[in-house]
Image 1 (tube, each protein chain N blue to C red):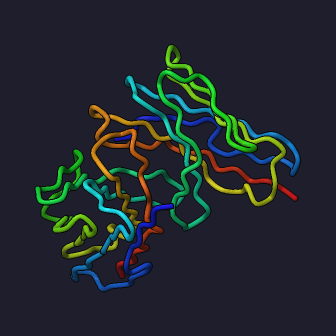
Image 2: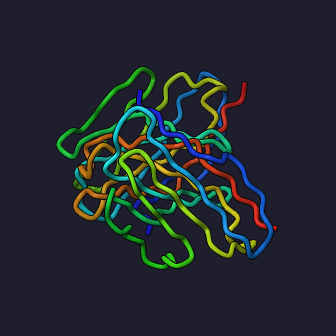
Length: 117
Length: 111
C-alpha cells in the first residue's frame, strides 16, 4: 500500500526554538495533506489542511503564525512549530490523500513526537 | 473540532471474546472509517463504510452504520492479545474535504 513517511520520528528541543517536521508521500502524489496533533491518551485533533501550491486551511483555534505549513510539492509538506514551548509537546501526525475527495483513502505517517523542554 | 464520540472509552476483555465499540457523530457524512493505533504509533486504516452501506466485513472485523441514528459500531470477533490498541472512528466533514476523528476506545485484550 501507499506509504507516508515523517521525519524526524522524535525530537527534543529547548523552549523558544523552532522545529520543522517533514511529511512525505513516498509512492504517490498527494494533492492534499493533513496535520494532526495528539496529546497523550487523546484523539487526533485536526490542525490544518494543506493543498499543494496554496495556503493551508487552519482549524479554529490553531495559530497559523505558530504552526507554519508549507506544501511546496505533491510529495512533501512541512510543519514548522515556531518558538516552541512545553505546551506544544505532543505527537504530530500527518496524512496524505490523492485528492480532496473524502472517498480517497488517507494514508497516515508514523508520527513525530515533539518534546519541548 | 471533534465529530465523533466513542463508547466505551476503555474496554478490557479476555482473549477469544468479542469486542464491540460504538461511535456516534453529529453531522451528515459521506463515509465513516475505523482506524487502529498501537500505543505511540501511527494509524492503521481498518475499514471504510459508505453512507449508503449498512454493514461491512473484513476478516474478524464487522462494521455497521446507522445513518438515521448517526452511529456506527466496530465488532472484533475472537479477539487476540495483539488486538490491544486504541480504535478510532473518523468521519468526513466540510463537504468531504477533511477527516475528523472520534475520541477513541482503548481496547485491552488479556491473554
